[in-house]
Length: 265
Image (cartoon, rainbow, N blue to C red; front, side, top):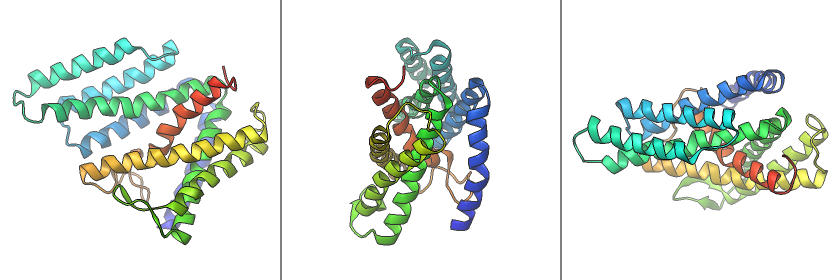
């Protein structure tokens, strides 16, 4: 299992690096739309949202990302329209009122949780593709160190009701991994980002902390839905949502902190 994970990572990471750094922003937009659609599909499958409602939610999710790309901001009007449209569709397409709130809430939650949060990466990329490399590199280092430290020395559970396998040692590893990844990236691949080593380490620490919350949030949804993985589309890794759960939270937080302190425009 570990060998399979390493082989897939060794193949995908160089391709993703080339895709993000060498191609135009529109290609990155396309990647986000596809990733969001796949993750939303998994989320709706977990919560048994079927038929036109499922595809309407995916369509509105794509519209959110496109709006964030072309207008440079997210329109509250678009979200209100999406909510009204989803509720109206539920009203007339399924005449049985049973589980109406479940259906509408599941669709709307996925639109906020996945495409809206993913869309903040577009704002980061406007300031250079190195910010995307920094984000994903820190999250990858955080997740990796959390896994190996938690598996090696983890004893005391972090949040057993939500994720029985996660430990406090693993959480510490996540924070340490984020910091280490940030410093290494600052020195090597993205040394032209206008950050000091201290600033990079602090951002990495925050990313490592937020990555834990993102991971636990998806675990909460999966436990509520009664599934282990969002899907099995990625061999040895689960589903698309399983792979982006940490970065869903880390992306917006990195953007908000960076713009608040003048690190990006």
